[in-house]
Image: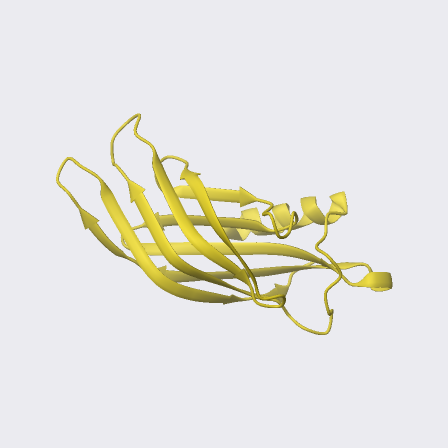
Length: 148
C-alpha cells in the first residue's frame, strides 16, 4: 500500500518547497516510535485513536502524537510540531503495524533531500467480544533512505 503513496507524498512536499530546519546533510535521518497505544472497535460508526511518542533521532526531539484512525485502522499525520514536512502513515492489521515516514531536509545551498523510512512491527492486541480492541507496542526505529 505504501509503495505508491510514499513517492507521491514525497514529490508533493518537495515541489511545495516544504522542508525542515537546516540539518547536517551528510547524516541520514532515522526516527523512533515508542509507547504505541491503539484503541479501536470493529463497528460501523465507531472511532478509534492512536497515540505514540515520535523522536527525530538527528535532533533528538520527541513529541507525543495522537491521531484519529480512519476506517478504524489507518492514521495519517501531515506535519508535526517539530517539522512541518514530516508525513507519518501507519495501518494496523492482524497484529502487525505497518509504518512509513517521509521527511524533507534542507541542505542549505544544496537544496533539499527527501528521506523515506518504512518498517513493520508486531503489536500485542487484546479484544473484548463486542467491545474495544487495544493494541500496544514498546518501540521501533526506522532508518531513512534518500528517496527523490
